[in-house]
Amino acid sequence: MEKVVILLRQHIGAPCQPIVNVGDEVKRGQLIATPTGLGANIHASVSGVVNEISEFSIIINAFDEQPKDFVPIKATDDYLEAIKEAGVVGAGGAGFPAHVKFKVDLGGGYFIANAAECEPLLGHNIAVLEENPELIIRGIKYIMKIVNAKTGYIAIKVKHLKAIKIINKALKPEDHITVKILPDMYPAGDERVIVREIVGQELEPGQLPSALKAVISNIETVKNVTLAIEERKPVIDKDLTVAGRVRNAEEGMVFLNVPIGYPVKKFIEKAGGYVEPYGEIVLGGPFTGKHGEEDAPVTKTLGGIIVSMPFPKDVRKVGILACECGAQEERLREIAKAMGAEVVAEKKCKRMVEVNGRWRCEKPGVCPGQAATVIDLKKAGAQVILAGTCSD
Ligand code: SF4
Image: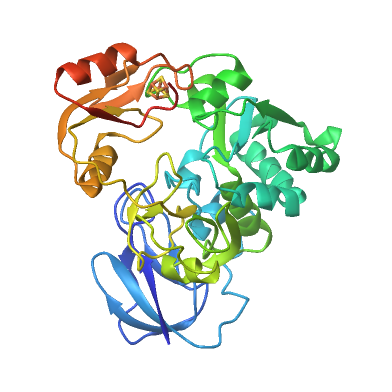
């Protein structure tokens, strides 16, 4: 029996409260935890027996034979309620509960499906678009109806030419959805860059797209909306890309619809196993991912499992240069530590400003030269620079 770990916090907000007990037999799709405030329902991704419950997770001993089907969410004609019941959250990383985000009246504004697949190596969102564009188009139409948007967009980088052709072929004039091409740069998938490219106006740091009558969700979130409404399917499966120093996945191998809760090492092994030597496992994309362990479970928001190159062993003094859209100070310090290097100074990109206690970028993607900041770091004793900035 494999152990499947379902985290109780897979979203922005407080951890969910378990509604099952140790020893209970659960079925794939069964509701097992509910929010205590801002949050989203959590369902069993496998059939099995509840083995352990802690404040962080519910561990299920999965039966050897697993069904493909699932316990459906309760029947409802209300789209927003279906999304809530299914526990849909932003699958692109943030995990904001979708039923809360979509509870807005845009008064005829825009819904934008984010297909930028912005982080290098990741490919699972584009794979879904190429395999089943209609699934995404229907999802966009459901969301447009919910949020009262007159126009839908699919924002996609120019390099995804095959996907662009497939979507354009699948779209009909009556869909009121247009493909919008994004430049092939990082962070083109940032919400504020997308709003700037599509709506033609700049959001202030910390301002939500709804201020400019727009709502943005990534492709997998849209897919989960369609599945919740049409198939009454809860969010129990995840799309992933495995990449890096993995035997068959150097350029990225996509896994679609894997049950949430299995350890990431299972997918590294499925992709051929490690290429030795390697540095660390990164959970997320190369720019914004975090260090992870082999037994970390797949969650509703995990997109990338990247095995990095070995850390250069460099004991020179390090200066850190952080970026809102790339690696931030904490992550850069983590990398310096893994290199065995001492951090002697830290600076942020000069476009970063503090808004409500959080450092934000004033103009994501319009990246300045960092020469002056680098000189400052050198003056503070840095011999080498670790930069999380997007360019320069
Ligand atoms: S302007 Fe600075 S903080 Fe903003 S995205 Fe570019 S490098 Fe990052």
